[in-house]
Length: 99
Image (cartoon, rainbow, N blue to C red; front, side, top):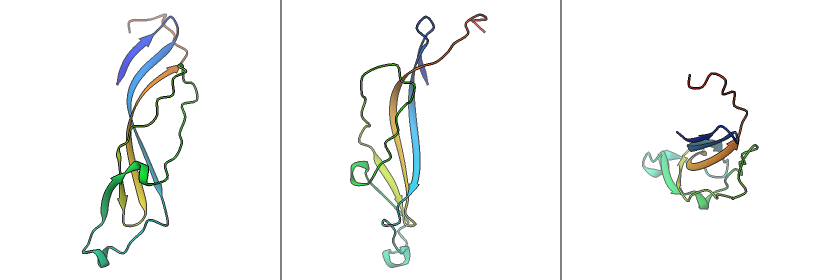
């Protein structure tokens, strides 16, 4: 969701949900041994998380990731949805604004 577009300074502020999916070979289990359990939710701080950085960020504040749960599947797949507020710089052509 776009929160603000500062045309003069060419800064876009957006509310995002970032979904990241990866596999961890050490976090697998045989679901037949655990009564068919195929997924659990655990705190994201309990697993390794990728450190993704916005390349063209427009503010100096470091907004750390919120502590949300990850979904861990029996095959080692980890899915992490985390909310973020981003400010990024982008070139905006306002010649035909409003569209």
